[in-house]
Image (cartoon, rainbow, N blue to C red; front, side):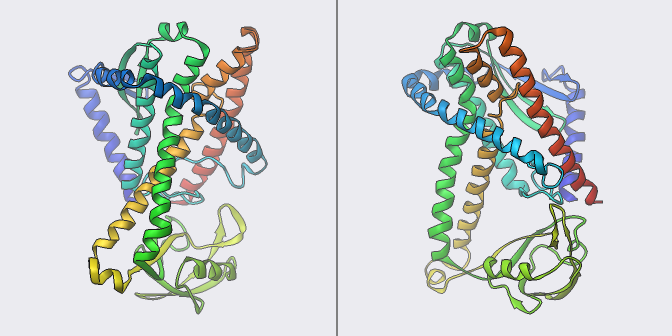
Length: 385
């Protein structure tokens, strides 16, 4: 619950500051939205765009088909999720530092904030650069806050956008998500290199460590982060593979014995929020690592652990850029994918058909996302109390 208090305190402080000093710092308040526009950084974006305009166009020409692939693939996954939308919701809020029961992903607070910062900066700067490459003026650049959710924006001149060609519009609309996917690819390569080669060479697993405990779960009153699980019901858990094998043997409602480096604990398993037939403890784990003697003799016992921080950092930058980049490509306005979808339809269909088609598809997509988030996240939040 500490992370939730962090967000509550941050919300109170930021909004109090915004209300008291909105005139001095030119902060706009529009309902639950805070905006601050500026004309700074436009020269920086201009210099990047004018340096290699041909390269930027080439990258986006290659990126547009990729963007359309993810648009329709994500739509396909969303349609397929309808059959299980009230069992295993496919969409959930990503709130760094908050572990919501039933959510398949827990994003650590520090890594989550850094990762989301890269998402926002890369996405919006890419839009701005391609807008300038295509001759579209930038009216302003700014930061926004929806309640407590941060964001950024580049505001292009709408009249200029109307004048450019359809392919130029597609390049501008796709730029943000394509940039996120490129960064995701780079960080995944770095993560894979560290995970597959550097980590096995530097470390060996000697147990399974509890990274976090889900609030309101069976483990929340028994276990705590930092414990190293050595066995479950007498079955050794030397790494995540043997840990997974041990989990397959436990049943819903069974009282299990967990041996750790700090003593023995007993807890009664519950039902998995996303699969009632599977037992559930409510912990997130990773291999507990020990530096190999050959490495420790050269680099010491502390320095090699820098690899673990880099591995985590690159993973979360990859994950968040990929997740936000692909979701943003869904064919629903006001998402970039919705604008691309509208431009695609406009290429062959009359305006009287394009507008209703885009509206209906947008409503369909947003409705699925809303139901999935409200059901999955709302249910999880209730389980925390």
